[in-house]
Length: 156
Image 1: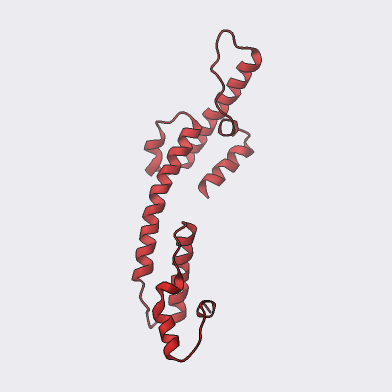
Image 2: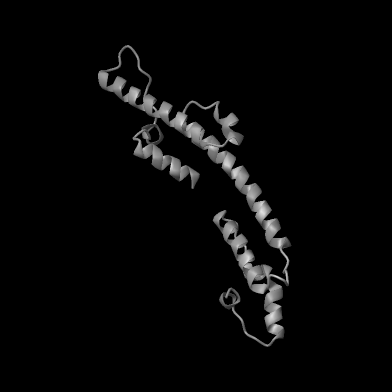
């Protein structure tokens, strides 16, 4: 989500050229005016994009971002940071999902909603967890009551 918003802003400001196009050859004595203009356009886009992105990232990853002068390298480094933090978040959510216990005071419905919310957050992170497989005790409870409940009915 963060990356999409930044790319949208860069596109609005018309400085996303360095992200979309490869770096042109450096300017030499034999470069034509068109080649010089193209390189200057790319360089301006790259410089402004890097500055804009650095203002939008959190302080926690700003240190690793300072070493990058090309916007594509910077975005790649930021993506790698988010992969690491996504894995940590997924691990935290899995632990939360597995350790959540039914609180009689709040009730079964509240518990199921909390479990569904955690499962939805995991699904966003592409961690597939089957809500019903983890909640086998609900299925056995309904089986003991001689009810035939499908997963969709358990959500209600």
